[in-house]
Length: 201
Image (cartoon, rainbow, N blue to C red; front, side, top):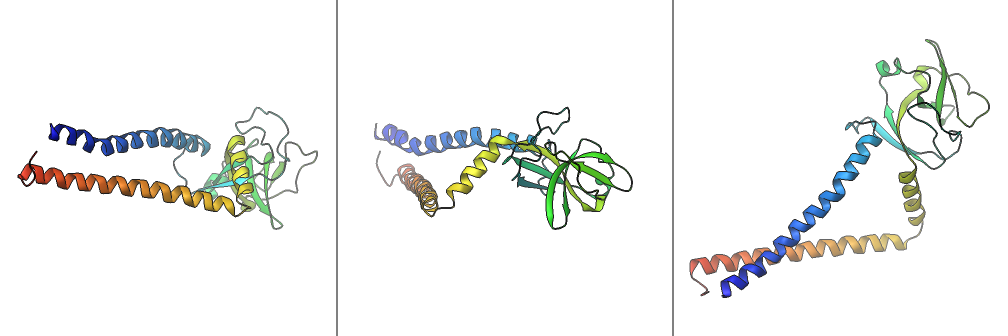
């Protein structure tokens, strides 16, 4: 009888851990799937970079291209391009380039072996021609929702109190799992003593 009650008590932390693992998995899988598609259906994050678009120059309405309109404050994923990949750029691609000390995200409207001409979808005129050496990467993913989340977090972190709340939550989670582990270790020791006959069941 005592042994049966003990086993039920001993199983509780294990059940909590299993439930915790299931819940974490249910969260991790959709997040991993989101970032996979956000990264242009690729798991290569070493050659990618996330940026928040601070202007509405690319918010010109829907287009027929794979990367359509990019509203202001959207988060974009940029694939850093090698020299050989830059040779494959085409009209319609949205690229990031560095010129005169400014990073710009605009669409290619004309391209030749000598120059690339870009324009914001909401702009009335094209940009100054650039070369492939100016190109940094190509936009492979756009997320308005993630951009709103990043902006909200950024706004919250301008104050000191969110740090305290986040720190407290992390500490509480760590303490909870430390207590769970201590209970499991303690109950395992009791179980070993019962099996060895040191404690009568």
